[in-house]
Length: 165
Image: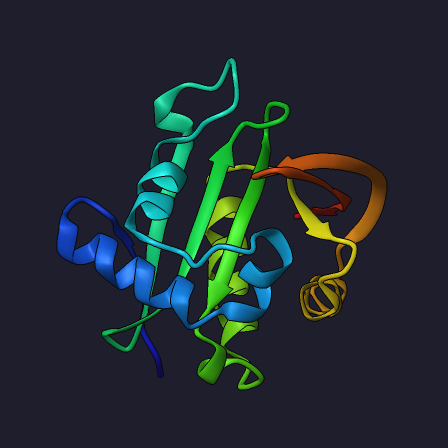
């Protein structure tokens, strides 16, 4: 049996835990930025919400597995529409990948969303993020559209995917 907990990032120690995960996930971050990740990236990710979204819809959490912090998830509830959750980021440390943990974390989130009566989960995956794309397809997400989104100084093509729960 294992324990998964989501931990709100509410102090500098926890921000540093999140930064540690960012720094240990260079594959993903190399896709969106040439710069190294730092604490201001964490603070920006914690605070940033799209126009029209209320603060209580934003959830930026560390993921603890058997009391070890291994990942970060960032999601919005009732976005972009009612009864939908948009997962903006789900990452785990590089050295913990390919062990089934991402699937365990996603199942935990999916069940939590289902228990709160959400009907769909939406994600966006960079076209050149082959690891992420493979992962989300294994979780039975289906492509619904492609669009270009701004990341730092450049636009990147994103595959928008969705799953009914």
